[in-house]
Length: 163
Image (cartoon, rainbow, N blue to C red; front, side, top):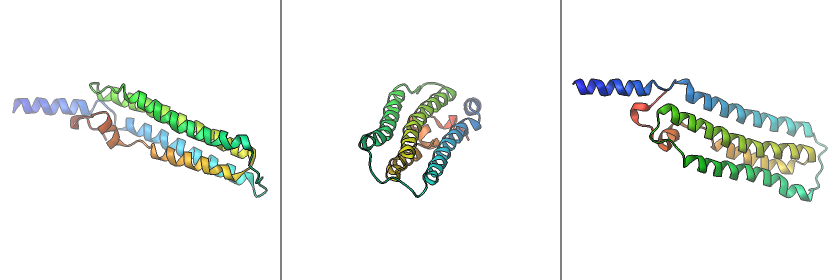
């Protein structure tokens, strides 16, 4: 009985190491970036108006998709490199800090590619290029932070769970 009480106390100490709002900060940051990109895309789409250039400019056939694909690939590879340094034996706070910094890097790389494609699309006033922004935004949506994947990837034990 005495050992069980110590284990319960240890589990509650580990669970309280992280504030319930800590993971929410990552989610709030993510949704803010996502909504910002979507709204900027809508504003630029409507700002281009109906008098759109229909010709395709050859260098931008490669630049705009390249920006989006670079953001996707860089985000993936940086994420993989950072995942090799996951502190599996660290405290919950160390794991969450690592997860947050990795997520912010991935978000920034993807958003950068998306915004470059959006600005170049606006400069060319050609809505054909918006499909690349849409692809990048859809890929960004798939990056949303998830507690279950965090717990699995960082090997968070049941006593370390948080709200």
